[in-house]
Image (cartoon, rainbow, N blue to C red; front, side):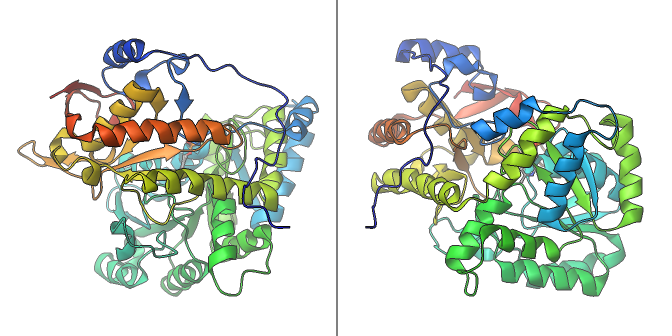
Length: 458
Ligand SMILES: *Cc1c(COP(=O)(O)O)cnc(C)c1O
């Protein structure tokens, strides 16, 4: 018999208490945090949808593997196990462990980047862009047109626009293009999947032009689920086989294992080319650690080995994608404008459509983020002009392409009743939407300002 309710495919063995708070307490907490939920204490939060990064619940198998962690400085058994797991998945011969994704990015992109260099991606994630720009290079986003329209239900909105990629190669010259980075799924673009056909074509274009092709593989298992269910010819393939095929088209990958590695810390860089890998290894040793641990404890590497295998289990992935979809469907029914179709790890709300009365330079996304916290203790993040806005010479805001708010779902952490609570809070958000007010920035750092900026209500 086919059941409609997708239950969590796990039982709960360890629990963590959630501290409940009142509306009044939260109003004060938010003020003290300068209207930036990144500055809240976690115990002030009821449902934390800030990120799916490093927030996964580990399985009993992962915890027991941690006990057998080999903490040797060099040549640890835990490293060899992890290396084998990653090699088996990616097919790449050179693997560099790092403490998280951005460390892999910093190593690779600072080596490849520098003034005059250009990187092209479906969409650069914030840490990716920051590492590239910090090196002096330029980061150009090249998503397909469909991705810019939140209501268009194109199945592979994460795709890179290959026609524009060819034009950009002509314009900048292939020798100036440091790499093409395909982010799967496309986090910033709404957690939308990339099709196998697109990855294959990007790979061919890069090969023809002698350009390095890197996968940002943070959510490659979730991406594989979408390919299996939406792309012709992949319904019979396992999720892992789909991921393996995608890796085969690229020259290497960076991965934050805090996503589809199902761990709380960890990452890696994997490459085909020995020369490139040697150059990166030097940088790895300077700042991360020796080549057989790269900033990780042996036990962290054990948890990662198990997580990278568990994440491809069909029951897990079905639950994962369907439960994200559940939240999206429920708030969409309430009239909340969301990015369609719902992506893999998060639901993205289009705050400009929800709050048409708040101008872009008063950050409608940040306003929604604050409303969700005040009304329900829900923490999430703005992915719009706070995160990606720039200023022109006169100090006027150059806004981001969209003003989204991301409700990221931690893996294996919340149950359906937690999600139903979030839906209830959204009911109140919709009922009071005309009362929401904008914000102005009163303090900001130069890079990644969304993490620490201070705001005031307009
Ligand atoms: C999280 C993430 C990163 C950075 O990884 P960290 O582990 O947070 O340093 C890079 N790219 C994408 C697409 C991500 O989602």
